Image 1 (cartoon, rainbow, N blue to C red):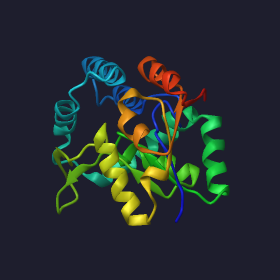
Image 2 (tube, rainbow, N blue to C red):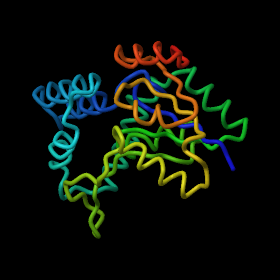
Image 3 (cartoon, helix red, strand yellow):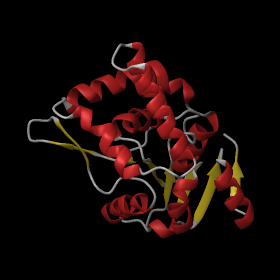
Image 4 (tube, rainbow, N blue to C red):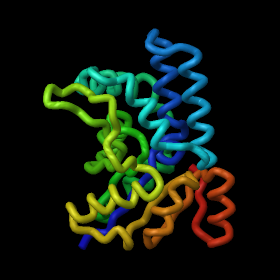
Length: 217
């Protein structure tokens, strides 16, 4: 049975948070306003401190995409990644992924972001598997404006990661998981080896108390 190495994306494999990078890109190309940028910055701050109503925010964030083409989103995010995101990849993260791959571990990104943000990074790192929050797409290939449940957040990360484990034949409880965020505490507690990377203040306190490994990427 393979061992799994799971990596969070924002502020773990990447130094930056992709939602902010994306809305800034939208602002620069005329698809977002300063109000949109401020709103997303506020949501990210709430997310960081674990005080966000993630279901409500997801519904509000996704609703404007109703009727838009998923294919167009994929293409735009590929361009955005090349222009704005890939330079924020951490060297230590790249080396950690390569080390697990060399050891024969099954490697996956497990992120609260969408696959449109995560898959370009996965391709760059040679990672085959992405566990993420997903958006509903209708039979015409257009977004419905609704997120799929559960979101890949909190205990929803366990649910979605368990689906991958069942599909690929590994034990999630035997996995290693790298993350920066207190909101990932449920999955960090669930795996055999939590590794804390660039932690937010709440997660650092928990990690120090439990003597979990802390790394700075």
